[in-house]
Image (cartoon, rainbow, N blue to C red):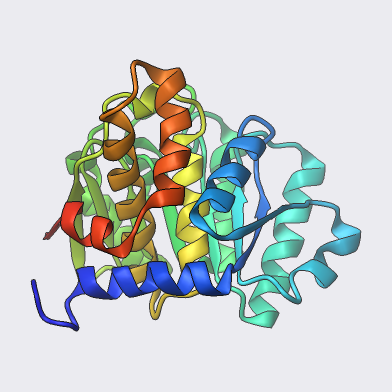
Length: 271
């Protein structure tokens, strides 16, 4: 694809728009990854806020460009805040990205993810293959919050979930799969070191949230966020010596990433 209206070119323009607008991404996310995802959003050019107190959600979502809900470290108070935030975002037209961390690993996680999916009407669900299979009702067990399935095994479930929930679904793995139930894309590339770093899936959800604030459609936002993750990880791997330096160079790669880098290096194909 080489014409000015090709998807890669639109993604490049979305990256420029993100840097220009610095969209505020409101994250109600887990304690393990708050620092990681906030730094990734800042490095890319977005503006993060990590806030879950119910008393301020109405105010903060009044100027947010996107809401990311991540269920990684649940308790009853945080569940209530997520449900409240989703309702407010729906009224204000703020797009929601749902990251159902560990869905299928416990009844609480699965039930919470399903309730947010059904009541919150997220624009995008970003998850690993096992989480998608759990949400779509397929048989399968997750190992903690890690995936025990491949992306290819979850493609049919992802299409079904996208159609039934009227959302875009992004399945992350060695090859990412992104679909709105009609159109679908696969993204290759990245680095095998990324699964050795905590919070990289959560970071993908946060970056997708940043693009949801500037992209024309949820599908385009999801492809943009996942493509940026793949390309930045690949660039970082060229200099890193292990997971520690991979994480450092990944932030640098996000900061330095240009539209030209993104277009030239992304490995995107229709599915």
